[in-house]
Image 1 (cartoon, rainbow, N blue to C red):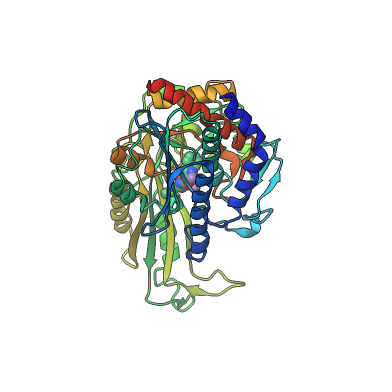
Image 2 (cartoon, rainbow, N blue to C red):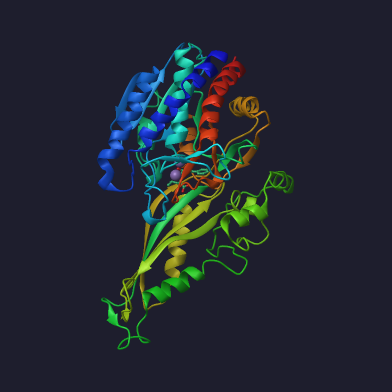
Length: 462
Ligand code: BES
Ligand code: MN
Ligand code: MN
């Protein structure tokens, strides 16, 4: 291990330069205008893996963006770690809220990152985190210290629902055979309090379209007599929560896993300071489902949120118009054992049933994903615990996250293996927001910790 960490130290400046180069390519999977850049990023990842010493490196075509595969099999009898990550990023909009251009990485100090952080779209989610694995592998491989086999599967469609990853896994079951999936695409509690993610929420995402009259109308001539789809949509949305912020869709909570008092108590013992949470967000008060703490609201409870709403006139000045249509994008975060397909149907049926006769309503489902929980009593988890304990000097805390990585439940279904979610970001790193950043401390800590994961995992499997 000493050799590995020495190698890391000697190469840390290059590790950073290489990541910055990767961050300069705008691999926005949601926007077809960036198709070339997304594909270029896949090729760069493949190149980096090859240079690090991986074999059978392949940029695998799919119906969408390619999946980069690579492996290093040192001994078929040894266990195999499959590293998963994604090289695509969220759109950077709104651009004017960035302090520096999203694809021109700069390093700046912040309160949470006194040693500096890399500001760029994808710095934390997930290029910076996936690249830690490429560099940790390079260090182990170049110093002949790999204790087990490794396979890489890096996709380019995570931010748009990973639609082609399921079919790829099914088709390549043999090639992807492994003992554990290792993912760094989540966060730790703070740089002083390491944690391991033990749960992810599921997701049901859809778009609604409310239509009133067959065309836009003069709001004086027709106003008051014809349904305004924006007014109606707002009312319908407002009716989806009750005064305690419970979701009012019939059947919505039917399958929600009930967590025991003892487990809830343990969950709430994790370090969390409500005052600094509020201060950091500049809010006077938090807002959410009655009867649950903020930690619970963002982990074990489902949610329904409007992500976007539009319609009518939004240009300069005023235009008196009764719009014909109104739209909203709505997401529901799900918890075990809610089924995204079932929840989407419950939503659609309910939403249509509450529409007044003056409008018609269409519901278009987007992607979805299952929630996931990972056990803490497995060797897969224990290896992560021991690795973080060594590099942080503290026991990491198991914690469920509010985010979603739909593919995790699929790995279990298709490949029959559990995932370990050993991420190194901070919740305050502004992923998906303007000024996304990733701490230099976190980047290097990840590269330092990953080889310990390999070491402990290989030892525990013996
Ligand atoms: N890396 C995130 C998920 C995440 C973030 C998990 C922080 C835990 C902590 C991932 O890239 C992501 O953004 N997922 C999407 C879902 C996807 C289907 C678009 C999400 O959670 O919104
Ligand atoms: Mn991610
Ligand atoms: Mn993301």
